[in-house]
Amino acid sequence: METRLETGIKGLDAMLGGGLYAGTVTIVRGAPGTGKTSFGIEFLANGIEKYNETGLYVTFEEFSEQIFRDAASLGFDFRKYQESGQLKFLFSSPRVFAKQLQEPGGEFDRLLLEGNVKRIVVDSINNVIEDMKPKDTREFLYSFINGLRRHRTTAIILQEDTQLLGDGCVEESGLSYIVDSLIQLRFIEIKSALQRAIVVIKQRATKNDNQIRKFEITDRGIVIEMPFKGKEGLMSGSPRDIAKRIEEFYK
Image 1 (cartoon, rainbow, N blue to C red):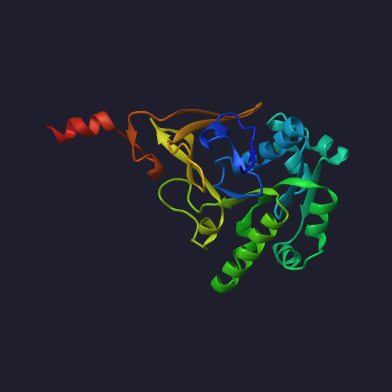
Image 2 (cartoon, one colour):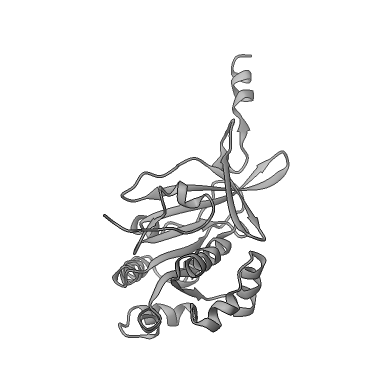
């Protein structure tokens, strides 16, 4: 039987049917501000604190001090994890990183092997593929995903949507077909206020909860709550009351 790896995020493992399969690759996708980085941070922190699993954070945009602050706002001390060797960081330009992934024995491979890394977060894949031609993008993604699977690491890749609300999403590069799981984050407007929503779009080889649920980002981490009830059109960003629609239909 395949080994399950619990994310440790409250409510998420139940949605995933018990967690992610070890050695698989998951996309966490959403617009800016929906909480992608928070999910990545807590995934690594829980691995260290709850399961004694070394993590690797790969980033192209933010310096470590910003990541330390983001982690602290969720109740996690990334500086302490780094000093103890439980958390590794790889800061790189997208071009250099893409080259390293295609060179066995490079810096990326060394960090995984020497650090006995079990969990990886890549923040974000958009930076790596944005200047690539479609053909090169697909070849790179296959190489990247297969490299992660070869090392039996469990990885979360963050991917940014282009619109805050509505049906807009990233241009399809084939990544969602290659990965094992896809988690979508979205802002939803209800009564003139934005709420955060999460849904598991895809998960291979297991049954998952496909209900759209509300979640909160707190100073003690992420909390996934009950499904939205009595609403339709949630993924459009502007849901309607089902009861009201039925009432209008029978008028």
